[in-house]
Image 1 (cartoon, one colour):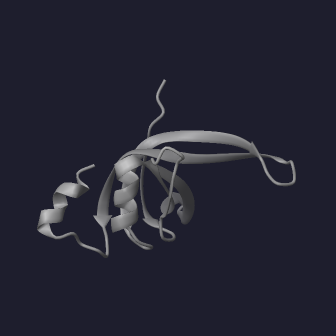
Image 2 (image 1 turned 120 degrees about the horizontal axis):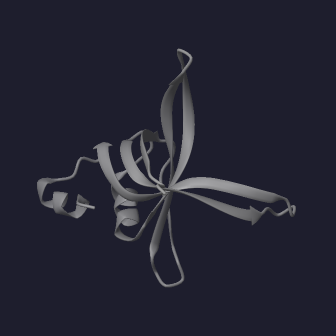
Amino acid sequence: MLNEALIVGRLVREPEIRHTKNGTAVCSYTLAVNRMQNDKEYCDFIDVTSWGRQAEQVKKWCHKGDKLCVEGEIRTDKYEDKNGESRTKTYVVSKTLEFMQTRNEPKFDELEDLML
């Protein structure tokens, strides 16, 4: 079985970071990804989650409108909302990512930090 996702898109808003109880960084963000269907262009909004050092680097370097390439796996979570309704959330957990176009271009000595 194979569960792989490769998406290229632009950040819809600033990435949000939080930390687990044991201090692990978790960064959530959404990419706008264009696709063609029947000669029409559509835009899908894909939620992405990054963990650990990668999460910290996304928060540090990426901003709304920046272009990212994310490789990861698709996850689905089931939960109940505040009204007791059953909900499902599908998102990508990033394994690797590439900063394709960012507003904050890193200085040469900071490039080592970006090797994820």
